[in-house]
Amino acid sequence: MTARDDARLQALEARVAALEQRAEAAEPTSGAEPASAADATSAADATSAADGADVFWALEGVRKRHPEPGAVLFTGTATTAAGAHYEYQYGLETGHLLDVDWTQFADSLASLGHPVRLAVLRAVLGGTETVAELVEELGSGTSGQIYHHVHQLTASGWLAPHARSRYQIPPARVIPLLAILTAASGGN
Image (cartoon, rainbow, N blue to C red):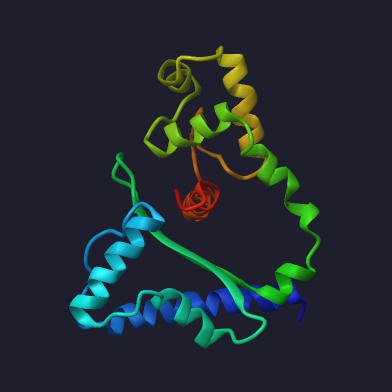
């Protein structure tokens, strides 16, 4: 088995474990997480003071499952203004991440490096599906220019056609996209 197969198996095992934990939980989790790191810390401190919960509950879970050299995990749940709901979890061992050729991710990351493309993704996640709607909503660029950006995002997997002349962010890419944006915010 290759390192990539092993990482995929571990990610699948982590997802199954998360589903099992959710099924075993007696009470549903409450509310949405705070939007910023400062809010997360203060909200977590308040929760800890109220019920003894650990501020770093997610980190402690990763440490227990993946001792040194560790792992990187991202997970999330999101409901968009359009009413779509997404849940996702994925992780890789740190050793794998440090050994893999990072240049293979350049095209995917570069496709996110343009303000219009980020605006397109935000609009599509909000329910805008066609290029004509994107031109109208974004108010910048011609349909040809928007098509150029849509094609770049489609080629890198951030967008996918789902019906005649309609686009969506593939469900498995929504939480990763939001995780990238969270990382880019630097906790601000």
